[in-house]
Image 1 (cartoon, rainbow, N blue to C red):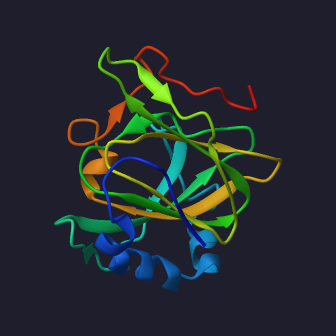
Image 2 (image 1 turned 180 degrees about the vertical axis):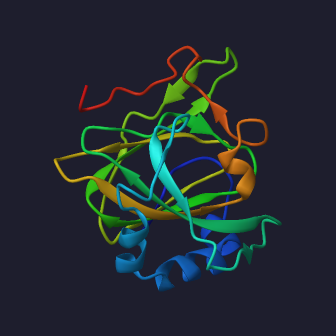
Length: 178
């Protein structure tokens, strides 16, 4: 099942179909092995463990972006720090655990306006965050979440296309595990 959020760019499913197709072919067990405690380091800015999947060729999408593939782990009781990208979509395929994706926008006063209803997702589901949407994933339950995601490489660099909203007014959503 693929879930999208209201707002942002239109026609995400069509634009990134080759990316979504590739996400579906990735073996979850292989990804889980890449995310062992010993082999993985936490991205201190995003607040999660991210491992590149270099064995997978990047995919060009009709939105004119080149998508790379990554594995990630978010620990029990943790969340991905809120941030936004302005170019390219960001699909996530959960392969273990469950959580909620909080989505918002940056308003005229530079404050983050969060949608009232975050989207609940579980293992086996795919969600798509659109360009321009502030997002923060939160783990629900005792099990860590493992997911595969794809995005332009610029999404992982603060000096390119990753703007952290932690310093913005209302920069964090209301987390359930707080």
